Length: 251
Length: 251
DNA sequence: ACCTGAACACCGTTCAAGT
DNA sequence: ACCTGAACACCGTTCAAGT
Image 1 (cartoon, each protein chain N blue to C red):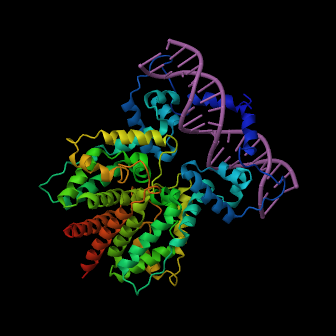
Image 2: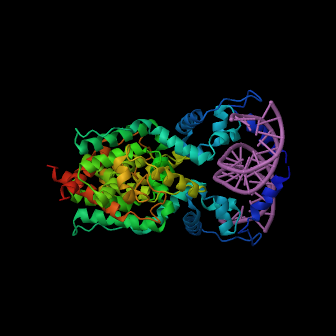
Image 3: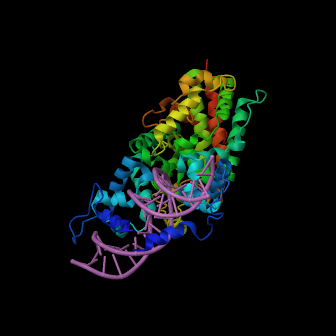
């Protein structure tokens, strides 16, 4: 029954950090909080990211954060997402072909996310942090598609397709492993693949050398350790070729 | 200091459910647990899904679940993911064109996930639950691509592109809203869009009627309330047209 | 204005104990 | 075999209090 007290003690004397400078302003700023949050997410992932851990890192009580960012954890993660995409911005250059411009955008987006892979689930699978993509980038994509000839409804559809293409592959490629029992899960998957029946799954069994741990659904390592470069290029090439064909039909 | 006691009491007397049948086997089965888990995820989403809530729903102590599923929460969510995709399976029919077969697969996948939209983040953004897609489905996709002429490395790349296309759009379309402050966040986004400068963002401002709440990054509602049917069709049409062109270059 | 400190209502998971 | 019950080590968030 005294564990509660111990909890309270642990609140300030966590293994690593602890609040210091008693009674004096720690001089927190919103930017500092967001940047530290990104660093923490980079280190432990969004699943395990907590305001208490962030407080430890900053040397303040976790509750101090709320004064600077009212929205708490959610708002912080949205900021982290847009922070990770700082460098993706790319002015649309009417000199270059719209297709090449989009291809370059896709590659830049992937390069940026590879610097902060743990942010991928935020961008790909949560509405809020979709706001991490800047309106400037949206405008530029619209400009590229406008140059391609898309208008009105066709523009909206093409836009949605482009954003899905930009986020989709990379979200999957960088999808995080299970937090704890990663190696147990990995070995259970390799067992399952090793004992795949060539009768029931002939192609899978035959192509396994090229596919195991290098293909979606069949891998136990994500894109950080094992980038899917050629798959990515195949994907954006297919998509953009098709989009070009679509643009050609626009009258 | 007595709150700990109250916590323990609350453990069995949660608002809704409570363990009954003292001392008698509750007759849990793994299937029952997984199906109830899916129902709970459908109701409250994976973020808020907890073993304690699941225990309440099942009328047992949350710790009882560990006897049936050793892996705890992670293993359960993986099962939930594969459970949600039960009906996606589709035999490859060599009679139909591989392109049409893939298009139909994409639509089936989307239809299935629309029945369980809260499962989308699991499939799109976490390595484990990628295992939710059955090996049968993998084999069939390989068969379709084999019929298209892809071999070896080109097959692996095409496969990765196809899976990314299948999951990517839908993951984004069904991305969940922020749990709590959804309406606060929504109104802040609408404000931001309403006050978009036509000088800095000419296309965005002009196309806003078609884009607001219907386009990625610019919406505050997900695909459950607002399906992006035509965007989806544009996406898969572009991708498949490009893939077809790629297949044509194969020698 | 900015932060501490206590408190509330949650979590996942382990493990001994009951039946 | 199957479940209870207690315990441990965590969470996010609110709010009064300090300075």
